[in-house]
Length: 190
Image (tube, rainbow, N blue to C red; front, side):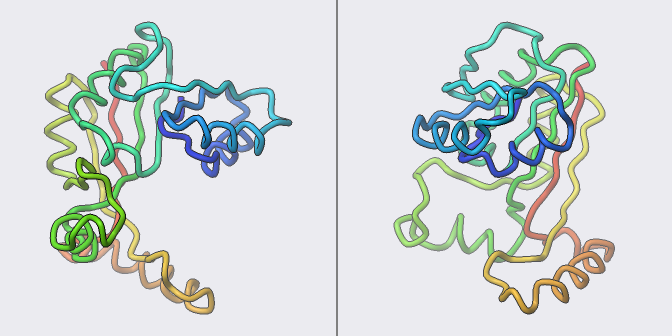
């Protein structure tokens, strides 16, 4: 299941790359409609409108739950409990999320008024340490979270290659990597 599929950007790639049956879930009907239109020719995707904090699925039905920049929009503990519930034993979760240790993320999520950055009142990035504690509290094992990515969306196209190479280098520098812009979160249900 892709949690928070939005308009289907990552969903399209996952469906094409894996050929797996994927349930795409989002709370926004209009985004689901866009995703459905985008993937109309792919018969391996089912669409579902629902709340990630109260998933509309039976227990233990998914092998994998993944998403990109969705958990920070939710009550983290509630969403992780629901993900745990719907994963089969041995099932895995993988999410990419903003890293609250990144200076630009701190500025956006903590220091600037929310109306300036068009953020909802409850939206909040978190650190990989917070993610680890929350995952372990729910019962996940093999929990891991790694900071990555210094490539910011406003980098001019002509500089993307250079910044991407620099980013790969910076991701390997101890301590400096902790302030990368994103984090990849992984865990397994025992």
